[in-house]
Length: 117
Image 1 (cartoon, rainbow, N blue to C red):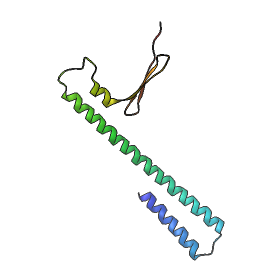
Image 2: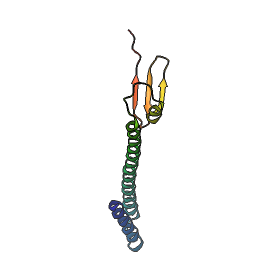
Image 3: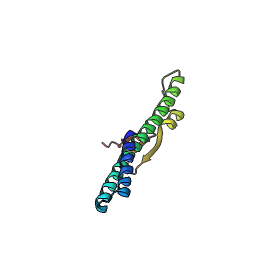
Image 4: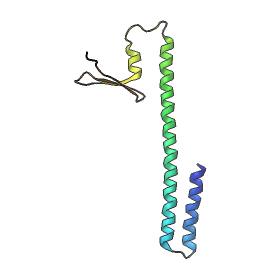
């Protein structure tokens, strides 16, 4: 956040200088716009990192919940388990040619192509 604070200070100084000193307005506008663009870029980068951090936190929670469910089981799975299925699968897309795409809740996709032969 220090980077945005520094840019904000530079923008304030730029505005104050424009208000108190005679200067070429085209140069002022260029400098001001450059500083604002730099500020917006830094702000977007921070937002992107925060979003990625939040997504990882959510994914971690899902994995932990899945692990809890698995630990409650006394034996290895040897048949379909609807609860586990619903915990990890978002959707299954089935195509006319037999291709199936499994979409996991974390966004990962696994494609299964029907083998001929």
